[in-house]
Amino acid sequence: MKAENLQDLIRRSSSTRQYFMSLPVPDQMELHRYNEHVKTADQLHRYVEYLQTNGRL
Image (cartoon, rainbow, N blue to C red; front, side, top):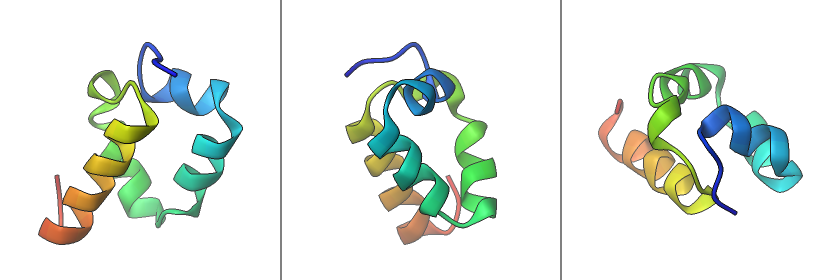
């Protein structure tokens, strides 16, 4: 599913919403900074992997 942005993706996909809500709050806040760049679950997972590997996006 391709969404307009992260907020749209979270709103439209319950599995993506569950995954996002399972992340630490600081990571959720950091990901919201890239709202316009996250349009698929795959992109979200890649951003999270980068965040976990490098500390911050």
